[in-house]
Image (cartoon, rainbow, N blue to C red; front, side):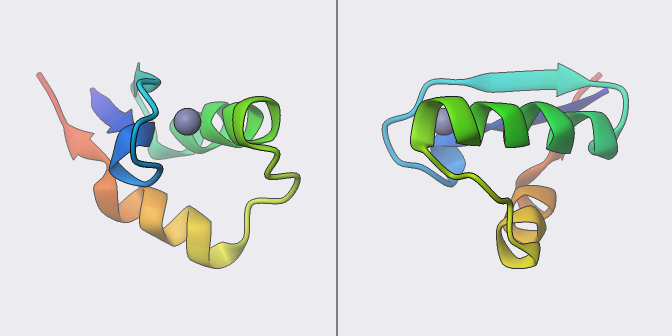
Length: 58
Ligand SMILES: [Zn+2]
């Protein structure tokens, strides 16, 4: 499984996700970024920084 914590990119945010694929996490993060942080569009740079911080969990 893959895991990502929004707080790794947005200090103070406690949202985190666990999913089987990177793509699924990116979709969930995009929804959260829009709803919680007012980020309408996930730029390639933001997507990359999310990808860089996704960790593998068992
Ligand atoms: Zn967040």
